[in-house]
Length: 111
Image (cartoon, rainbow, N blue to C red):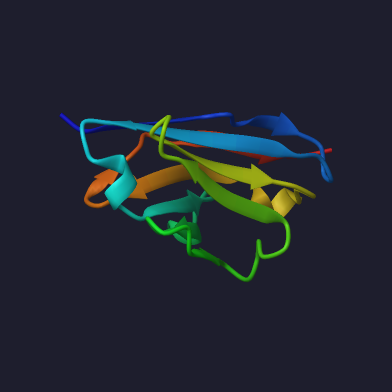
């Protein structure tokens, strides 16, 4: 069965960095696009970044230049490197592949 597990969230101050991980099992990881979404309190779930099987990337305007998505097919893992974090980045972050969601990891940016 398919499982996606996110990790790496936490509480940080503005300007600091975090790296999120999404590790997949039960599917052909290298064949599928990976997408990161986020959902703040009282808000809808929004697109953050994506990466295709050929390493083509796309970013939401709000994170472009600060976040970097990558993947390591040998580890069945996708990453989201988040630099220069802002309070408005506070959200639960979710990864998605094909037809499957992870459970999410919380990122809180606060002084």
